Length: 297
Ligand SMILES: N[C@@H](CCC(=O)N[C@@H](CS)C(=O)NCC(=O)O)C(=O)O
Image 1 (cartoon, protein in one colour):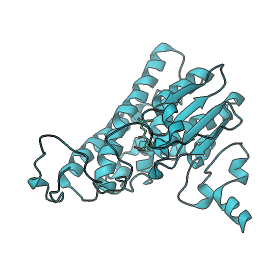
Image 2 (cartoon, protein in one colour; image 1 turned 30 degrees about the vertical axis):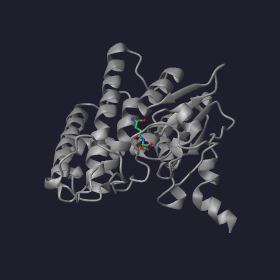
Image 3 (cartoon, rainbow, N blue to C red; image 1 turned 90 degrees about the vertical axis):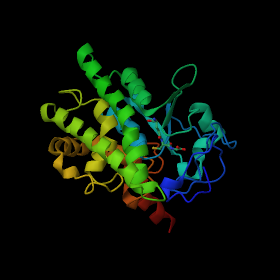
């Protein structure tokens, strides 16, 4: 980083060697660092269920809570879980307990205590696949259909960073609006919308006829843009023009498990939509933030 006024992008010449000198502005400047590892000692709480989730209701977090709620709705009682909120804006992802579970310091992370030894699972795509295999659910069994499901799961893992770290960062979070960057990533995300829209013209779900982990991975991000809850960019991106993607977004959004999954580890928006910690199915009725706050007063 240099002292050069960054809004004058034409005048910035990268130095020979980049040095970490100061915060670069922008919404996440406080937590951005060029090094990995823990910044402080902090054990993680552990609840009573075999599955422990440490997360936040961003699109990456919601993928997993949708999957867990879908598994429970199917009757897999082994998918009961405790979900703890990790406040990434305060750097909770750099606590020592979190880093032991995920050396990459990003939500979501899952700890499975059901075996003799704890299994840690990080990267949301890996968590979805782990749960699908563990419960033999939401991953087609037939090899060709399974491959198609994994094609789209991995597509999401490779594509969403262009929507989030690329478009979302420069459109919403960067301290200055840089036309070149916004143009570059708008071009790419609109191309991605078209990829999905064309596929969904001939397929009910991402993997064909079966609802799967591919839908659960893609919906929070791309459905989120269609619903204008991700970056509030629906108008800018003309989201309404992707009719098949909108049809699919609406259909998935109507599932009860999806409605519940969206609420878990949510710490913003309407108080009745926030279930900051989840330990029991009844929490959706009894422990949303509106109820917790009214019982205090
Ligand atoms: N590829 C990772 C990405 C996870 C990710 O980017 N998580 C964000 C929140 S959506 C995070 O924890 N950011 C905190 C940080 O970057 O320090 C996954 O899918 O699990």
